Amino acid sequence: MATLLFYILATITLLSTVLCLTRKNPVHAVLYLVHALFALALLYFLLGAPLLAAWQIILYAGAIMVLFLFVIMLIEPPVAESRTSGRVIHWLIPAILSGSLLACGGALIAMDPAATNAIASYWMTPRDFGRALFVHYGLAVEVISMILLFAAVGAFHLGRRYRPTTKEDVS
Image 1 (tube, rainbow, N blue to C red):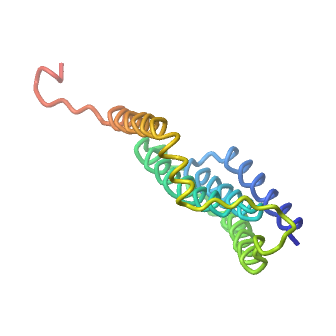
Image 2 (image 1 turned 90 degrees about the vertical axis):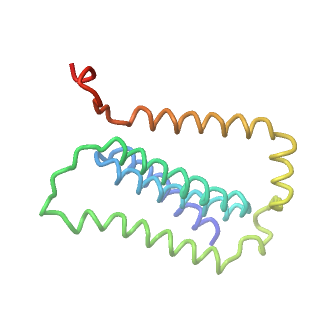
């Protein structure tokens, strides 16, 4: 059962990633990327790394994807013309991917891969993870947080529209 789930989740991850790369609408691409990240988190859980799976969902599928959507809204891409034909096909592929992810997640919860000894698990408690991250790599975490802050301020500055305030600015 674990092998079958692994191949299903790997297929969902690859298919979602390919769909993400081939979409013209950036919002659709981000949504397919969220599917790929959720499938990857389920793969981590299947392989015996539940903490890594939780971080995958919280950080990447949650926070980073919201940041991507904010950047897309800030850029304001041109609105694609609405299609009247093929409406079902636009919803069919994401519905199949979402249903497959839900089914695989339910199967993983019912199966509980940590209870079986088929897969070696390397458990790390959140306390151990926090200690390793902030004691041994505290400076790197702070440097990365400052880089992300600079990137956010730069994106805000570049995304601002220039509005002249005085007559000298107009000419």
